[in-house]
Length: 310
Length: 310
Image 1 (cartoon, rainbow over the protein chains, first blue to last red):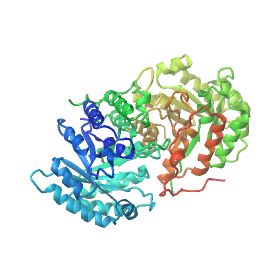
Image 2: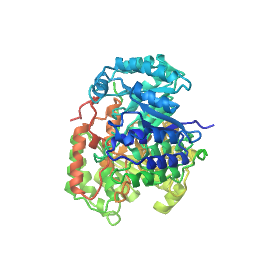
Image 3: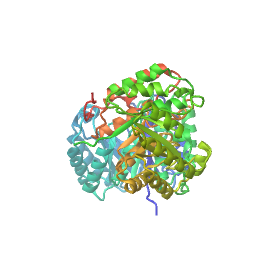
Image 4: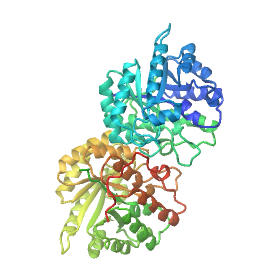
């Protein structure tokens, strides 16, 4: 039996929110359908932020509603606060992702309050999501878990303590995030191993960016520590796509190749996934799509683990 | 005590041999001096192939002779056969690297004889290198150790068997090579672990290319298996630099960053190493230099392990 890996596409949220161009709703839906056809079964589809702040995601309801019609697709949405949770609950979204920063300085800069207050807010969000007729799963992403652009080092014991508080608050999952691309494999393996043990049996997912070339080495380190859920984006969309050479999220295609080549089961058909790039390239001709496997092609010693699920 | 890692620059050999432009001897020397000043202490400087076949490396003697004047620099040269070994011995080169392919089809295509005959040839080369007044160290690179562009899969037991034959032949070191960029971390960790145990205490080095994005994940896997010596090239020079997006060797700067970030000691000053790219960029304006750390810069949580050796 091969190990199962859940790869979650976050490009429609984390990718598109960093690109000025507003992708038409029908293109987002075409992209989503194409990834679904390639076997992708986990998608963070959009974000319930005020449309004034992120016009790129103003159609969150429409895209998510469509995603929820795709059988077996694990649909989730990012929520910045209780107001976002209410929008998600109203739509019946099955899973939501809240984000706070482990680093106090980063949290202050992002949402103008200390991390402790965001943890309080998360407690209220959990109550909201878990009450009502159709309770939704609620995960919490811990940004700057492996370093901070403002504070530099982030204390690993603080990451563990906050992860445990989030677990105690009733989270359905934790996402250790390195949005700033500061992580390195030794720290990632160490922290994942500890947090996974601390909060078991709660799932602990990884959200990595490839800013400094260590993206897939970091994925391997988290995998070695027991992580089986990873965020990624098609073509590495995200970050700052207009800065030459800057990359965003780890590349979905290369991450899927890494796991399939190692004999893990992602459910993804790599050839079909690579073809999805054309949908995004047509819609965003000014954005560079990253990724090695799309350029080099699959090697002759590659044996896909399983066909994409239908 | 931090772990010591030997990073060997192979761009002047593996990089330049794949670029049509002939880099002037004085530029190669300037590049070498600049890397030495940045703390690099292992360099495969050139190759003793017939100048007619590789005019890019026709100045092998001149560049290697200069390299041998740099105190504490571990100078090595590639040799394709006994004739190359003789040129190296005549110059007093302290260390030479022979290469054969584990895959029979690849060896036939490369040097028009089966792998078994190359192993015989290697035995003669060892005798040559180890006899005489000033014996030279002689390593053997095992190409296609993780897959072959002609045969596809390469049997792991065959890699182990050939590595043991090479050790028995008197090699001073073995280099498991994935020149074709077919390797994946699970296989790499498994094969390195076994070969290191098989040939101990012989050192087993890694030579990886980043063709399919797994380069640094593969480095991490070999490191986890006990490997402490890695080939890399500045800007990822090598492979097919004219094919857009195709990459050659793993990037020296990013590999050094990976290890220094993990707290391993490479002896390399990353800021100074990144500056060396300007030397190569000026000399080869048509060649794309790869690498993430040169573009993104060091993160604020980076603490270099040690200053570059003087």
